[in-house]
Image 1 (tube, one colour):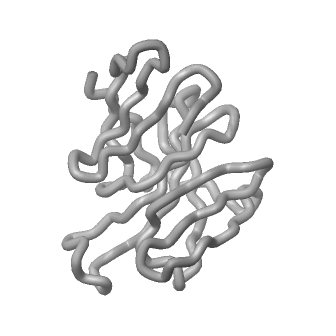
Image 2 (cartoon, rainbow, N blue to C red):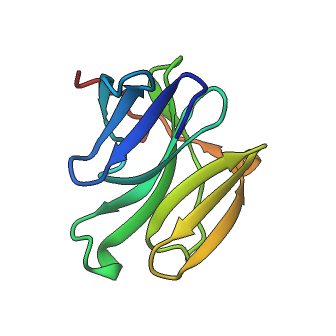
Length: 134
């Protein structure tokens, strides 16, 4: 995704999120993803949203827990989440447009439309500090 200045890339294999300059592709910062297997990112004008799966094994449908969480860099934490419909099992793409999320599902070959205003604050014990690796 693009934040107006830099690109953000999710690395599902490494569980990392990279902030990359558009001028020469240099990695500016690396963060540990709040979701074990991040598969999509969206910039809402202020914060980065991450969609992906927290799973023991990605190959087993019953062990997959799809999630959509907000990384608030001003607060330094993952501060909100959006409940995903049960039909969405393998999120693979994410886009934010005017308060709406569009989430693609790799298994169902469907796109889901979700409203950002339905996002809820994470409980204190579920809030995670944003961890910068580099």
